[in-house]
Image (cartoon, helix red, strand yellow):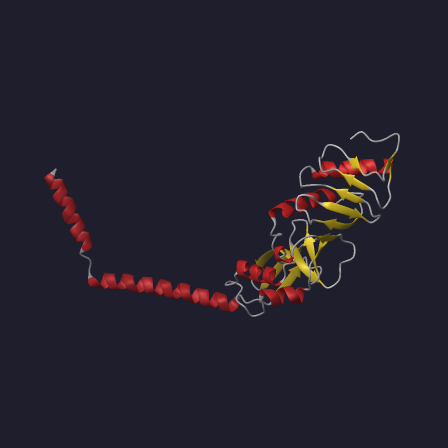
Length: 264
């Protein structure tokens, strides 16, 4: 056993005793490889320069606004493009932009694909109005209320931050659940939403009907209950419907129920 161990040690010593010129040659080869890699990277940066920028998905925003916000320009290196940083710049400048996707098409084209937020309501603040999407994110300021969207009152200005959900978790949950159920094929034409009481979403229809929906639970069922009941009720501007319980509809004294009625 000792002889084999000694032979192994001698073999390792022989391998370590290499001529100096071999060491120098190995060093020069490694240095040359590094130089070639750096040269290729440099040549790639020089060759792969952005020549065309395409923007897709823009609606309210223009392609020029998107490109300017992302600070993307012709002549930039397509290799060193930082997609996440560009997306952050665009969304910071324009909270209307929900998502950004950036694709590099070698050798010289960049495609920016954006998805804009879709408004469902307009929040009333002391300074004006903010369009809001179904996730309760305010994203665009308007001096006048936007046509075609219900006005949302009862939300303090400090809770409204462009690009971020409303600062009140209760109101945020109630509104998001309501819009998830209402946006689409709902027959209820809404003019105003009052969220002064964070636990009771109050709706006013275009005809002046007042509806109490309560908190955000079972919103789809509550809407169905209202819509199924309305054809059987003689409604006027003094009528108030209450579906806060989620199990039944309660009418104010001004409403008259059709004898046929509705069994929820």
